[in-house]
Length: 263
Image (cartoon, rainbow, N blue to C red):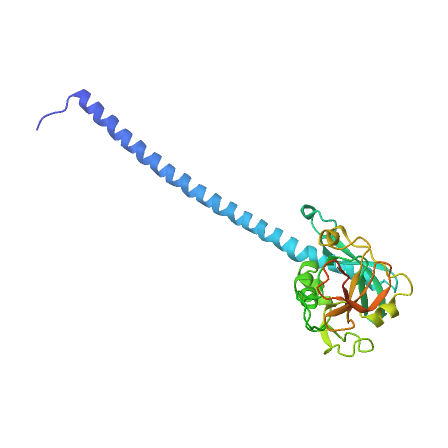
């Protein structure tokens, strides 16, 4: 068997040392990789926990706290007071978010309040087609109790709005249809006479104006007019018109009303 000279022995020794060092480096790299994975997993868990907290805080805690503050103020309100409840686009600047809705308290019965928006909040036809309708069947009623209520109130706030059964106004509208149960509704002619002692003019928000309303224009009532294709309204001077306006009128504003439960 041939003998290795000294240079070859040294080279072989160096090669073995390099292999050993490579193995050590590989093990160190594996340890470092495992450590990085562990740190990443911990970091990801922390980020997820933070995200869950932020989502919970903004979608549950804040709305619930806001409702508690609102209800505390509402419980102290009396007839004629202005209160805030819910939010809706009003200044027509979408980027800055929705504004608080200001309401006037028109009735207080035990633990309940009747609220009517201080301003005309939007502009919609009473019905989206010219045909015989009643409050029960009109598209404006459907919009108020679907699109509007979803946009204006949180889940906690909606739970405080209770449905009431309201007729159109049988005294003025003999063919007024069936009474309807709504969370959000419009006043009828009798209620306007009852709750408004004098001026019934109403200013529209900038958003409502952008949708077609006049600044101090007409606003719908739920009562039918002289025929089933007409609906009663209050004009820009505050006068009530029981003969009505055609239901497809495009520049009549919407002034919602609702009952809320304080208990």
